[in-house]
Image 1 (cartoon, helix red, strand yellow):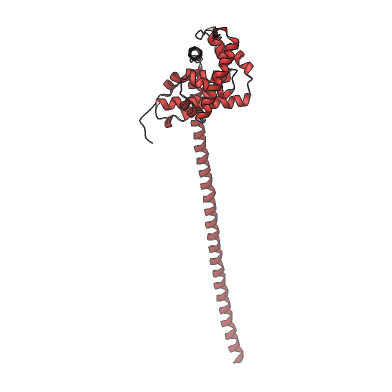
Image 2 (cartoon, chains in turn brown, green):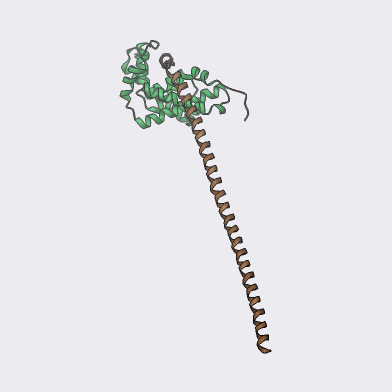
Length: 111
Length: 173
């Protein structure tokens, strides 16, 4: 008797808890949200790539500028060194000429 | 691990929407929240679809995620048991769904008044027809705990039924 009651009760409970149909719009909503999320994910991935490309381009510009500036400074330094060497050569030549003239002058005074 | 199973997401939604929605609706007692939970569970399934190995794996995974989401939602909302049935009556049973016997409706109402762990165990046992071992795996709980929740839940439900439903009062002699 007790066992029958339990079985009957459990049977009734099983029947009461049968799966109910989902709301008619659920599948449509899931599919729409899935599509929206995929588009959003794709868009955000595109934005990430665009940002990465822009960052790389900016880094290339900054790096290129830095290299150009270094080379320019090097070139200017080289030019300045060359000019100093020319100036020294001219000065040396002038001093040499003056020394020759002074020696000639001394010789003339001695005679 | 490589596997050859390539499920169609739309077909999976078709197959399992009733299970996911029924579990969520009976656990939360809120039709709107149940729809949200079902939607979330399916969207999460979409993200993990590549890891699914079989139809049985999908079913187990969906039950597990749904129950976990319901527990989270109930923790957040702390829905009072008395409110549950009002919402079940207004929402879940509405909109031209199949007719339920008054006795079945009362049992469903009583189930909604049980403590959450007992309700979860009984739902998986009697709606999904799972064994205690499968329920333990789904709820990630020890088997002994699940068996005790099933026993206590059933006992409590029967006691409620006996005091409320004349149909189940069997007087000896």
